[in-house]
Amino acid sequence: MGPQRLTWKWRVIAAIVITLVNLLRWRIDVQGLEHVPRRSGAVLAFNHHSYLDFLMVAWAPVRRLRRPVRFLAKREIWQSRWVGWVVRWGEAVPVDRSSATARAGAFDAAAEALSGGDLVAVAPEQTISRSLDLLPLRTGAVRMAQLAGAPIVPVIGWGTHRALTKGQPKRPMFGLPVTVRFGPPLEMDADEDPVEATERLRAALGRLLDEVQRDYPDGTPAGARWVPERLGGGAPAHDEVVRQERERSRSWKRGDGQAPPSGNAGGDGHGPAAGPGGAPS
Image 1: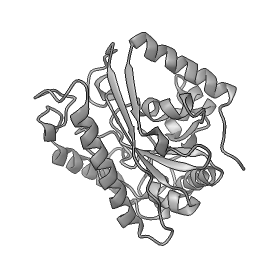
Image 2: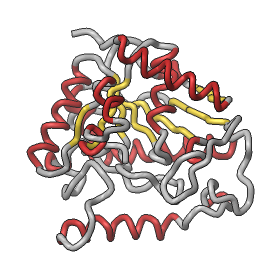
Image 3: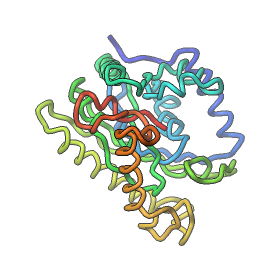
Image 4: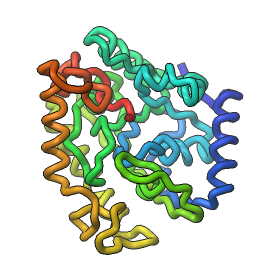
């Protein structure tokens, strides 16, 4: 089976997105696209910092390589009257958090798509990082790549969070600079420990993120809410955000809180029950 090519539905989605980006006059700067395979499958592991991550991850593969990107999307998104048609037309992989069996099925479907030569986008953090630095990564992306024998391409996006992200006002942001950086692919040996391999991925994403943040055209203004505390910005403290997310997950497991951020409903991120480990939220 060869890699999936753009269908007419994908072309419609792309035309709508391109029109909106042009109307807003966003300046999307893409670097490192040569690291994305032209024909074979790969996991695109991206930092989850806004509700528009799908745009920055798929922008160049769709426009320049003419290749669609298969996202993992929560079942709730599939059922949405407003955006459900987008994930259906884009042939996203549905993630049902209601049972371990459903999560395992989504994982298997994503691995099968990889084996068939598709690009599959995964957010290893599982949820948007309000600190704008990387949250602890789940091992799903690595295990998926190992199962399919596919590389992982680290992807960092920066800028879309200024328009639409968790806990911040929604702004149209005309003329917004958006940076997208694809890093060198990471080969995943089938025998490598998934936790250790995930640490390699985290290190690669962390280096790229720091570079992109420091080189961003609008800089890192002191106290700005869209700049991480690590660089003098006003985003929530990273350690506190990590603590809150861990408590939220523990609360859900005990049955006395709300569902975890996304994707891994009740799994520990290290085993098959953890599911795909990266349905964008």
